[in-house]
Image (cartoon, helix red, strand yellow):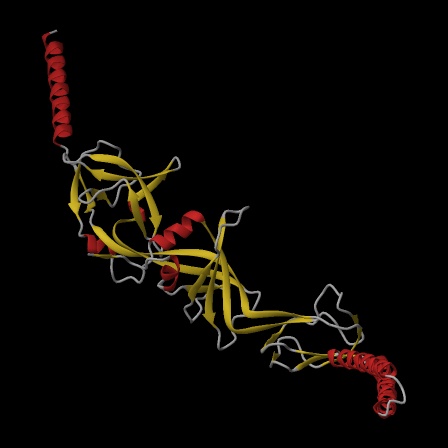
Length: 375
């Protein structure tokens, strides 16, 4: 019996000692180290992107001024043409015959005027007959000139230097000034206009962060813009924003914007598309890595360390910096706050940690092209 009590006593003692050891181990467990960065003000450039449509500086629809069948097509699709160069010729056989008859009437009317003039001078006949003959001559000349103009209009010439578009009509097609589809389009693409739209907030963000006092001065001083082509490649030339529409569209609330790009090599074509990139310089702003934040229930949060080295959740409002690595924080953080660089989504609020301070310059990595620079 005594032996049983002794064994039970030993087991209880061992159990108590084990619990005390576990409790001591728990109390002595050190806070885990996590990397943090102390917030500073920095300078950066935001890149806003908008889809664009491309048009030549002049994009002219070519239409027939007179009716007729297409007799000749002098150009091909995509051909470069000069101002005044013939593009199409319409059939003029009937007009030529009409011109011959009209010319004969002009000659006859002139003869009549020449015959009556000396008679009037000698007062053999009244002036009325001569004036009537002159009026008939003027009418005949007008008719003749109208027919000649119709013949000239039958040769359709390019009004500008440019590139020929598609040719939907073929030789033998009947066209008129009322034909819905143009014969072709000629686009002057020595320079290209890129058209896009921005909403009111975007327009204000762009203009309020641009140098200059007046609206036009701000436009003139805007940084050069880049064009990303539809194949994802960057266009070799930078462009310049030239105009914003004077008022917002009543239905969409957006402003139309036009940028201009040089196109000496004719790589860009009217009707193309792409994406324009507009840089905006920002000074003295708070920047954090995107990886140091988390989207939670339609809100973006980050974790900071309080004075007791305990984790605290903070909601923030951000704007993305070009390159997809950083955010500009508009609200939620202050200079001096210590933001966790790791453990986002893992560490719970109130957890005590051992912060390991990382220099801001190391976080922002100024060697990369789109990286902000600290002051």
